[in-house]
Amino acid sequence: MIRRFFFSSLTLVLWAFQIESTLSDDTPETVTFNQHIAPILLEHCTPCHREGMSAPFQLLTYEDASRRAKQIKEVTESKYMPPWLPEPVDGGFKHERGLSDQQIRLIKSWLDTGSKEGDDTVRPSIPDWPGDWQLGEPDLVASMPNGYSLQAEGRDIYRNFVLKVPITKPLYVKELEFHPENASVVHHALIYIDSTRQSQRRDNADPKPGFGGMRVPMSAGMPEGQFLSWQPGKIYSTSDNSIPWMLQPGTDLVIQVHMNPTGKVEDFSCSVGLHFTETPPSSIPYKIKLTSLAIDIPSETSFYRVKDSMQLPVDVQLTRILPHAHYLCKRMEGYAIFPDGIKKRLILIKNWDFNWQGDYIYETPIKLPKGTVLHMDYTYDNSTENLANPHSPPKKVTYGPESSDEMAELWFQFILNSLEDRKKIKETVRLKNKQVLIQFGQSALGSETNDPDLLLITAQAHLATGDQQAAFRAFSRVVRLDPKRFNAWFNMGTMLRSSGQDDAAKQAFGNVIRIDPNDAEAYGSLGIIFQEEGKLEPAEKCFRAALRLNPTDQIAANALLQILEKRRDQVNEP
Image (cartoon, rainbow, N blue to C red; front, side, top):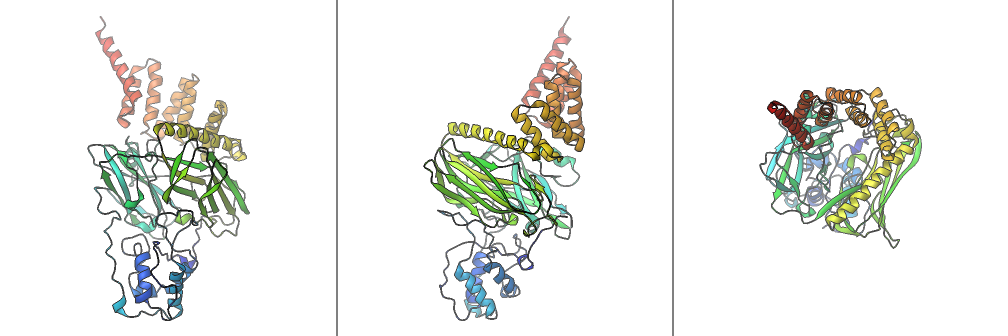
């Protein structure tokens, strides 16, 4: 059974936004709410601890704070709150959240001396916050047409909601702001774009709003080089120097939301605010990740290490960084070794907390010259001593997408100097990803697993090494374990067709279509086989279906045109 641990006093969370303290270094003899505590809460906490925001309670009044004074003292003293994980780095991060030692002492003294309210006349007024949107009123708001009902109990839910964007011409998006109506149930959200309607068809096929699971169609992805995500406490700011990206007409937003049941049925809906600009991007963003798939942590192992590295083929500027792991991770470090051997820390998290992950923006971009080696070094604790361990008793944990599995990722966003540099780093990343797959395939995890997800990776690893037979065996094991794995059937169909086994290939592609009637690629592949066999009528039906599902499929369009021309020629023959 999956369990999530929160100390009772920590279930009441506070948010804070780092600014320079205007308070004296000396704690006064008498600390009151109105004179000393209210300024701290109003500036640092109430941007989230107010109605309609992500925190579970308000901290606007003396009554709000006094009834929770003990919890406030505990979470600020322990520095569990404000939720800020990284250690300081040279230059610092934007939007650092944290209270000064003096502010923490004031809160402690206030509780210890009776939590007095003090003189009303010195209490600061409530700030004039913007409305629902941190960046102000958007140029366009895309919203869910219908709300989703989150079950009261059970495992975490991953749900993908498709939002239509009613634009008639290409536009540059300068800022994107995610706004959940019931933020308390959201662990995090990822925002993808899909110009093919494939995601919309998945949504239409599901009777509930959106569609389930962590897998979105291959056609859905983030704009190149962009981090489009939301976590509790996410700060949107026009000072972040975001790089515009192009949004084409007919493109849908796909919002993947990780939600946590709360013990009661919850209503959820969300919107996305878009801010446009007429100015095209002047920079070339690109993102890469360090990772390992060969994660295999035995039970009761208190120290397990995962490392990865990559050498940069070009000069880059590092603008932001995003670490990711699940509940067993304890410590994260990312660093760079420059060509002259000097080490520079890029991020260090001594006490990872899965519930407060996010991306971090550097105050000033970090210049990393060609030849710099990026390193990821994570440690994990799969013992009973790890209170965040989702398994009781501990059990073996391997790589996987579920919260009860484990991952190790460290994402970097770069600014590149030229399109030629993008080609070079793209090729480096391709080779790096191939090596990650091969490493997994060579591990015991890749050869011994019976998990369909891991077997799919094993098959990809065999393809990376050119072992077609081993890859086919792995895909075959996947569909024996889970006959509804359409991606395995599709790969088998492709391999069967390339080896001349057309009848078996048609059966495999037919299985894909039976599982997912909205798979345009399967219709197109099936159509090609029929066309090569001279069976023009079923080929035409397949190509028309492929184009109905994906009007941008140029291969299907050309094949259909060939069939129609051949039909016309046959009619005109004497």
